[in-house]
Image 1 (cartoon, protein in one colour):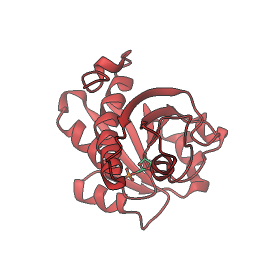
Image 2 (spheres, protein in one colour):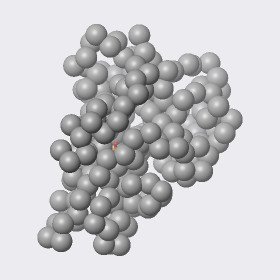
Image 3 (spheres, rainbow, N blue to C red):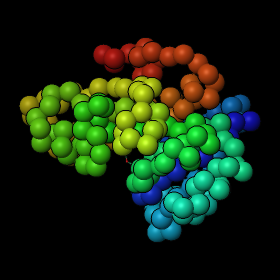
Length: 190
Ligand code: GRF
């Protein structure tokens, strides 16, 4: 049995796809807890609807919580605060970001990448440090931006990619598997 926590402050679409992915892999026995620092976050509604354990965890209580609750992996998915080192030392934290880091760190990355006119953007999954979107990169996948692409289309593609990529990478990490592009979504050109 692997225990993971998914921490989010907002919509929770990545959380939902992670839950659904592992529900289809009962042999992996992944036990998921949803944690949020915002009682009004939609991620909580999703957790209730999906029948997943959830907890409101105020930012100030992260240290005391993770000191006594051990997880194999703590997955940030739209968590809007910077975690300090004393909390990060209590577990293995990963995050997903909607750009090809180190480009476009921080908020509104999808908009800023599009407005900058980049022709390749994508999704990054990385270790979490106390530097915003600064930890070592675990996985990346590109999205190409054609000249006729509208922002909405680009944004949808980024989110679809996040939803496909995050569960696969979490599975690889939980299994301690080494992986490359070809093991993710059928290769870089796919
Ligand atoms: C995602 O775009 C993720 O990359 C970023 O925050 C967003 C969270 O979306 N860190 P959701 O709450 O999972 O729908």
